[in-house]
Length: 242
Image (tube, rainbow, N blue to C red; front, side, top):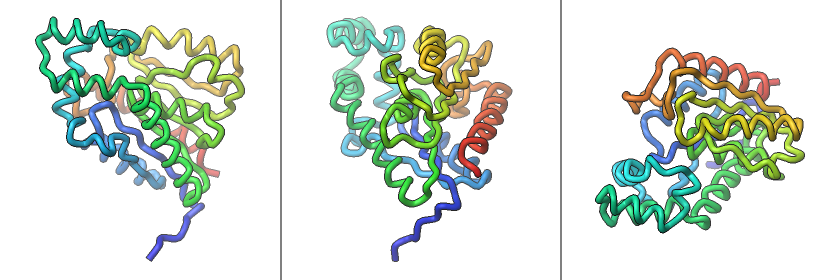
């Protein structure tokens, strides 16, 4: 029996971190459910589940953590860093997939498939993503078949040229001591101001990347995470519930 569309209940598409869906993703969905939202979690790694396990990804990320996002797309720099860290072939294979442009395009298409499917069932829809998933959430705002609003934690912002004409409300939450993302925040804010985008940015002091994820015990900041969630729920309620 096919479930009937329920346009009375807004949907939030939850986009997981680079580690893949985990207990953190499940908890976010449960918290959204208690607020009256439906949720869906697209399988961003479909077809690559055997390689892209949480452990394999963790090993690979640890090997290149000192490289910027731009440097991670440079195969020569990545190879040099892997050799310096004495990382194995599996780490190399994981990184070659994660930073392959065709793979990244596939992640975006999977995200938009979830948005389009959600639209037919729920009408009103948002995306909420973390780190890698946060970048996809922000990018969804730039697409023609965009969601009604987007939320992103510790995410790479869209290029300024992609922000032109974007009217979707965006909420972007960052950590102060995030080596990868914090340097991009001023440019993102400036681009949004120039393009007159509906953007809310909040940076939490004395926090690090993954501060919202209780699975990452060494980075989790309870006080900041609770405040970030209050901001998120207020934003989603404002932009989704009529």
